[in-house]
Length: 214
Image 1 (cartoon, rainbow, N blue to C red):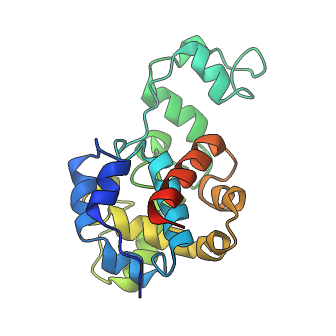
Image 2 (cartoon, one colour):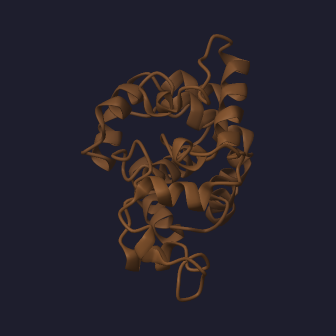
Image 3 (cartoon, rainbow, N blue to C red):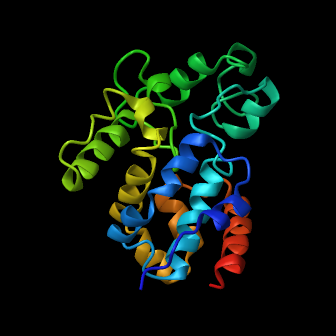
């Protein structure tokens, strides 16, 4: 029997969840079942831990890049002075310029403005043109009439597609097997591409495990 993702559980974990995410959760069970995420408690716990971190407990729909100058040197130390070449004052509190600088020229972002257009969105903060293209391809393999997320990125945090995108990404990156082995660092590597926020992800995992009895 699949593990049920109950709305009271989600409310307990994320009491301030955005309305689109609450709506998405109400119809999430078949999607999570399809991608094997609810096959056992460990998988669901790891999935929720990553989602809760990436989405700020279901409050973040689009990546917030409105950083102060001191914060920029912490988040991107190799890019901004004193360790990097860029002057943080030139990018502070300017999300569009910052996104185009730090995301431009990689992750499939080849056109002017791609860095900002394809900044993080949704439950797992899909980032980069390549990721939006891949999300479209994977979701359409299950739902042929799914929209083109590259063409309309904001659909990624809408109630209809937030969970299908996150669940498809999770499965495609092999996270179920890693969750079975309780390997949070490896799951984080697949989702984040690094270990950013690992302490917070661990905290979420402990909380979710306790509530699920995992």
